[in-house]
Length: 265
Picture 1: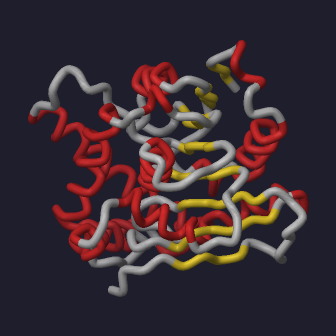
Picture 2: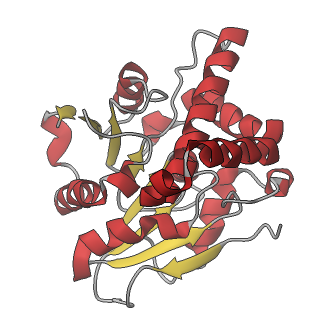
């Protein structure tokens, strides 16, 4: 599959409005941001990057450049720096690395259900096994999120068949892309990140650890964790309006959370 980056408009061009750029997760695509962009309204110029780790890819992009470089490439092709860069899952970590390593710039960064693992202790085989189980669960949830209301009509047997085919196609190479990103996350130069950061996650994502994500926000100079009881790994699809509200509040005053580093909803 062609490993390239494309940009897709989420609504009409609004060059006089602040620019929000969205980065999708692994085995997803740019269209998953449509509901969030619609909920943001006409106060934004909204663009989504369509990245090589889109649904159905063959993972050949891994041998060309790291994920952060692909994000930087997509941003470099735009006519201005984003006021707000928003990433989901794998795309959130890629966006964090791109900004932390100064491959690209952004006014503020919002990360929806990113991965984070502190640099110590060293990963073990138990770490590998837990990560693989979380990955399988999230890929199944990805299938269900794309199906939406069609799940009940097609039946559980077909859902399981579809999920099995997704696992078979992704294979070890796809899982390694995620596991390597997870292990590397604690080694990024986060202490020098010069932009405010919002991290969003929730109780219904078994792959999300509140303790680990608190560690991430604690490692950043200016960040907050917004934790939600009803958010799962695909909160940007299932709770698009709430996510858009969080982004709007954050963008309106991205440094207002300095006094309160964590919030529950």
